[in-house]
Length: 471
Image (cartoon, rainbow, N blue to C red; front, side, top):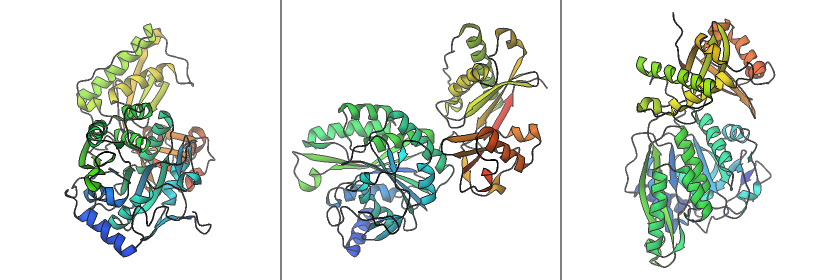
């Protein structure tokens, strides 16, 4: 039920999956968290996975997930939940009001949820997805007790395509940016209604796939029926997000099944608590490339262009240096003399840096719609410039933009434009002209769109820029 006043979502399973007595509920959740046999992590854990059955069965397991992050100052909790009762193809984001539990109303982070909703055509609000759903709701009392100041981004994921899930993960990654106060809570149970021994084997396979960040495998095998987890789509989205953010570690905090509580081992449901973390090399503003690594990327880009222009082949990339295999965004610019002949890049990492540089080099030389493709006879006259990008960070204060140091992205809905940091140096523009040109020339938005950073998304990033041009 949804209240017309303020879009407050009333609980669906209060008094069924968990007690509707506020005092008793607080005591239960505090005990689940307090008694969990795991210490709060000292390092940041951006993503946790928790079960969503009745608290009698899975509350103790969920407590492990939330205890692992208990010491963090979380201001925004993004809950990714599956849809058990309503079939739809996209991603439903509730972007107004709040959700009520016996512990009170947890407010929706309307700015974050609104920006996320606007980031993709398949990201919509569908009230029917929330009418009977429990998977999102049962996580809320844990959030309320662990992070009383947190606001909510409630997301229910249907059965979208892999592309939609990747688009969603990328949008979520951009919105989180450098924020340390955002927690992604993934709601899922594991196998359902198998004998205990069979269930444990199935669940071990699923957990191993999660620990190995095998998003594509999980999506495929859940769709085929050879792997079981009701939150397959939220888990897939979360693992894609983890890869984008360079997270590499997954810890199993607790596993059990319903038979461990009920003692009925014939038909059990599996539950797991997991933490996904690990500092990324990609997108940092400090983890720069050394001289040898820069030269290797320049050589790789030139070889990629030459081979593709001359005989149409993409060179293979097998880079032993782990720094060059980190996932980072990059642009490649091709110049002939002082004249630009092509510039294309990926702002968000889409694979190892070395592969991105190869692909962007070929694209800059042959696919930039502003220029004719580079011809073989031009190869001796070109020089290359590579920009390796930090992770974009959203800003609301335009004073944070430092021309010449920061690149800027402006986006609204499907419209998006980017200027690299060096654009300010090469043009000599003031900040006002720089932002106006970015709105009109690159994003196709009104010239003054930048003046209200809350009506558009403005992100900044830095770039490690180097070239093979002779001094």
